[in-house]
Length: 140
Image (cartoon, rainbow, N blue to C red):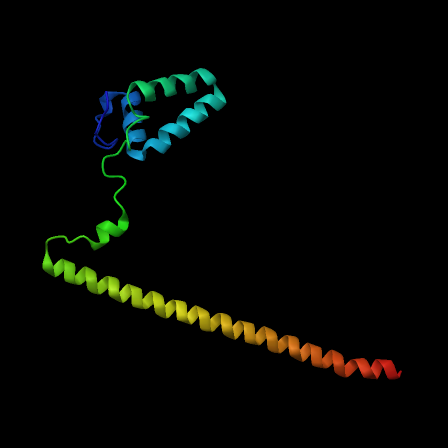
């Protein structure tokens, strides 16, 4: 009994158990495993029942409870939508964002360099003051 409906599309009269199952399926196998572990921690028969249910319903051996959960974001970014105008807009936007990221990283680098120089200059000034004051205190 593996449901493919998301919790939002599941009717309210379906019962809290089926809505919970749909919600966990939507979150993926990790949610099922976390719930099973919590079941073992708080009351071991619940954890055992969840483990048995996961094995019986073949949730343990599926690649994922969700069908399209593991499509990499890089793949969807580079994939063509079929609309040339949108693809050109997407390509231009991505290029602009990469350029902004490079400019921002360069700004951060200049900011770190300026901070390092200011700290070094402060250190050298303090050291020069200490060296200037040291001979005066030795003479006294």
